[in-house]
Image (cartoon, rainbow, N blue to C red; front, side):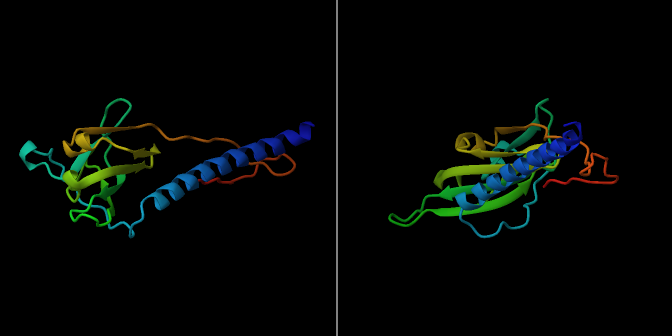
Length: 176
Protein backbone atom coordinates (compact mmCIF):
# COMPACT_ATOMS: atom_id res chain seq x y z
CA UNK A 1 0.00 0.00 0.00
CA UNK A 2 2.92 2.34 0.76
CA UNK A 3 4.12 2.01 -2.87
CA UNK A 4 0.76 3.21 -4.15
CA UNK A 5 0.64 6.49 -2.19
CA UNK A 6 2.77 8.51 -4.64
CA UNK A 7 0.73 7.15 -7.53
CA UNK A 8 -2.52 8.02 -5.76
CA UNK A 9 -1.13 11.50 -5.01
CA UNK A 10 -0.29 11.96 -8.71
CA UNK A 11 -3.75 10.78 -9.72
CA UNK A 12 -5.31 13.22 -7.23
CA UNK A 13 -3.23 16.13 -8.54
CA UNK A 14 -4.14 15.25 -12.13
CA UNK A 15 -7.84 14.96 -11.19
CA UNK A 16 -7.78 18.41 -9.55
CA UNK A 17 -6.05 19.94 -12.58
CA UNK A 18 -8.50 18.28 -14.97
CA UNK A 19 -11.42 19.57 -12.88
CA UNK A 20 -10.01 23.12 -12.99
CA UNK A 21 -9.50 22.92 -16.75
CA UNK A 22 -13.01 21.51 -17.14
CA UNK A 23 -14.53 24.37 -15.14
CA UNK A 24 -12.57 26.89 -17.21
CA UNK A 25 -13.71 25.29 -20.48
CA UNK A 26 -17.32 25.23 -19.26
CA UNK A 27 -17.18 28.96 -18.42
CA UNK A 28 -15.65 29.77 -21.81
CA UNK A 29 -18.30 27.66 -23.56
CA UNK A 30 -21.05 29.44 -21.61
CA UNK A 31 -19.77 32.87 -22.60
CA UNK A 32 -19.26 31.93 -26.26
CA UNK A 33 -22.77 30.54 -26.65
CA UNK A 34 -24.59 33.10 -24.51
CA UNK A 35 -23.72 36.07 -26.74
CA UNK A 36 -23.90 35.35 -30.48
CA UNK A 37 -21.47 37.81 -32.04
CA UNK A 38 -18.58 38.28 -34.41
CA UNK A 39 -15.02 37.93 -33.08
CA UNK A 40 -14.10 40.67 -30.62
CA UNK A 41 -12.14 43.59 -32.07
CA UNK A 42 -8.80 44.67 -30.58
CA UNK A 43 -9.02 46.26 -27.10
CA UNK A 44 -10.29 49.84 -27.03
CA UNK A 45 -7.91 52.43 -25.68
CA UNK A 46 -8.95 53.84 -22.31
CA UNK A 47 -8.02 57.29 -21.10
CA UNK A 48 -5.89 57.43 -17.95
CA UNK A 49 -7.71 60.60 -16.87
CA UNK A 50 -10.81 60.30 -14.67
CA UNK A 51 -14.00 60.91 -16.62
CA UNK A 52 -15.57 64.33 -16.16
CA UNK A 53 -19.32 64.25 -15.32
CA UNK A 54 -20.27 66.27 -18.42
CA UNK A 55 -18.19 63.97 -20.64
CA UNK A 56 -19.69 60.64 -19.49
CA UNK A 57 -20.73 58.51 -22.45
CA UNK A 58 -21.51 54.85 -22.83
CA UNK A 59 -20.76 52.68 -19.81
CA UNK A 60 -17.81 52.31 -17.48
CA UNK A 61 -16.56 51.49 -14.02
CA UNK A 62 -13.59 50.54 -11.87
CA UNK A 63 -11.93 47.21 -11.09
CA UNK A 64 -10.27 46.79 -7.71
CA UNK A 65 -8.89 44.07 -5.47
CA UNK A 66 -10.20 43.04 -2.04
CA UNK A 67 -8.07 45.78 -0.43
CA UNK A 68 -9.92 48.33 -2.63
CA UNK A 69 -6.77 49.11 -4.66
CA UNK A 70 -7.25 49.62 -8.43
CA UNK A 71 -6.11 46.85 -10.74
CA UNK A 72 -4.57 48.04 -14.04
CA UNK A 73 -4.45 45.76 -17.08
CA UNK A 74 -7.70 43.86 -16.47
CA UNK A 75 -9.25 42.74 -19.78
CA UNK A 76 -13.01 43.16 -19.74
CA UNK A 77 -15.13 41.49 -22.40
CA UNK A 78 -18.44 43.32 -22.50
CA UNK A 79 -21.50 41.79 -24.14
CA UNK A 80 -24.75 43.71 -24.42
CA UNK A 81 -28.16 43.52 -26.04
CA UNK A 82 -29.89 46.58 -27.51
CA UNK A 83 -33.57 46.93 -28.24
CA UNK A 84 -34.32 47.98 -31.80
CA UNK A 85 -35.62 51.49 -32.48
CA UNK A 86 -38.00 50.12 -35.12
CA UNK A 87 -41.05 48.25 -33.78
CA UNK A 88 -41.00 44.58 -34.73
CA UNK A 89 -37.25 44.55 -35.46
CA UNK A 90 -35.02 42.03 -33.70
CA UNK A 91 -32.70 42.99 -30.83
CA UNK A 92 -29.01 43.36 -31.66
CA UNK A 93 -26.16 41.73 -29.76
CA UNK A 94 -22.70 43.28 -29.40
CA UNK A 95 -19.36 42.44 -27.84
CA UNK A 96 -16.23 44.53 -27.27
CA UNK A 97 -13.11 44.21 -25.13
CA UNK A 98 -11.49 47.02 -23.12
CA UNK A 99 -8.57 47.14 -20.68
CA UNK A 100 -8.44 49.01 -17.37
CA UNK A 101 -6.02 51.93 -17.07
CA UNK A 102 -3.55 52.63 -14.22
CA UNK A 103 -6.43 53.78 -12.00
CA UNK A 104 -8.40 50.55 -12.66
CA UNK A 105 -10.95 52.51 -14.74
CA UNK A 106 -12.54 51.46 -17.99
CA UNK A 107 -14.98 53.10 -20.41
CA UNK A 108 -16.85 51.78 -23.43
CA UNK A 109 -18.49 54.70 -25.25
CA UNK A 110 -20.08 52.44 -27.92
CA UNK A 111 -22.89 51.33 -25.57
CA UNK A 112 -26.08 53.42 -25.61
CA UNK A 113 -27.58 52.99 -22.12
CA UNK A 114 -31.01 54.28 -23.22
CA UNK A 115 -31.54 51.37 -25.66
CA UNK A 116 -29.52 48.70 -23.84
CA UNK A 117 -31.46 45.84 -22.24
CA UNK A 118 -28.76 43.70 -20.63
CA UNK A 119 -25.00 43.74 -20.08
CA UNK A 120 -22.60 40.94 -19.15
CA UNK A 121 -18.95 41.35 -18.22
CA UNK A 122 -16.08 38.88 -18.16
CA UNK A 123 -13.02 40.12 -16.25
CA UNK A 124 -9.63 38.45 -16.69
CA UNK A 125 -6.20 39.19 -15.23
CA UNK A 126 -3.27 36.82 -14.84
CA UNK A 127 -3.03 37.37 -11.06
CA UNK A 128 -6.76 37.07 -10.30
CA UNK A 129 -9.57 34.55 -10.70
CA UNK A 130 -11.72 34.97 -13.81
CA UNK A 131 -15.02 36.64 -13.01
CA UNK A 132 -18.25 36.54 -15.04
CA UNK A 133 -20.92 39.10 -14.18
CA UNK A 134 -24.43 38.76 -15.59
CA UNK A 135 -27.35 41.11 -14.98
CA UNK A 136 -24.99 43.96 -14.12
CA UNK A 137 -26.64 47.21 -12.94
CA UNK A 138 -27.11 49.34 -16.04
CA UNK A 139 -27.69 52.47 -13.90
CA UNK A 140 -24.28 52.13 -12.22
CA UNK A 141 -22.57 51.28 -15.52
CA UNK A 142 -24.11 54.34 -17.24
CA UNK A 143 -23.04 56.57 -14.31
CA UNK A 144 -19.53 55.02 -14.41
CA UNK A 145 -19.88 54.14 -10.70
CA UNK A 146 -19.88 50.35 -11.13
CA UNK A 147 -17.14 48.66 -9.05
CA UNK A 148 -16.00 45.08 -9.68
CA UNK A 149 -13.82 43.37 -7.08
CA UNK A 150 -11.44 40.59 -8.16
CA UNK A 151 -10.07 37.92 -5.84
CA UNK A 152 -6.67 36.23 -6.15
CA UNK A 153 -6.46 33.17 -8.38
CA UNK A 154 -5.90 29.61 -7.22
CA UNK A 155 -2.38 28.26 -6.71
CA UNK A 156 -1.87 24.51 -7.09
CA UNK A 157 1.37 22.99 -5.81
CA UNK A 158 2.63 19.44 -5.75
CA UNK A 159 5.27 17.07 -6.97
CA UNK A 160 5.29 14.93 -10.11
CA UNK A 161 6.44 11.36 -9.49
CA UNK A 162 6.90 8.36 -11.74
CA UNK A 163 5.14 4.99 -11.31
CA UNK A 164 7.75 3.97 -8.71
CA UNK A 165 7.14 7.07 -6.62
CA UNK A 166 10.40 8.79 -7.56
CA UNK A 167 10.30 12.54 -8.22
CA UNK A 168 10.48 13.49 -11.90
CA UNK A 169 13.18 16.17 -12.31
CA UNK A 170 12.21 19.29 -14.26
CA UNK A 171 8.55 18.27 -14.69
CA UNK A 172 6.18 21.17 -15.25
CA UNK A 173 2.39 21.23 -15.05
CA UNK A 174 0.63 24.05 -16.85
CA UNK A 175 -3.01 25.02 -16.71
CA UNK A 176 -4.66 27.62 -18.94
